[in-house]
Length: 204
Image (tube, rainbow, N blue to C red; front, side, top):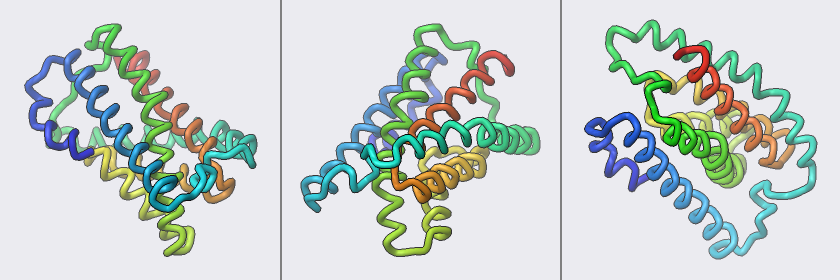
């Protein structure tokens, strides 16, 4: 995240395709830092097994069931909120390029980032590591709200803050119910896939 923010000022000077590759590289670095930091803290510093952050087979099927069932309605609500906010704030926000303007190669890279890398890396950190830390200090609702807010903040998009926070809250809910992050990873991946498909084939 620090590396990404330090180079963020260069982003708007790049072409559409280069922006996509740039974003992939930055999120890959960010993801590596999140996962690496999490594993170091859990396994080296605190000498705890990986199943302590929800990477376990116990209740994995239940967790995956939650993720599969919740992804479509969560997408519908969050995407609807995002669309309304964009329409309301259209006079004061900078328009973004259509996803259709990107090259096929860039779209493939972005899809890998959004549907594979981001869900795995972000869920390991936010729901696997950070949520239990918050849960040890707060009741479930405050812990879920704080986690969701932080999840939305790091995405650095004011218009999408509320829908992303909603997604983060739902992912915390699955974690709270199942103590397993398989479901949050699946739900996160399915949600991102639905967003990309909608942007690619509906809002061309």
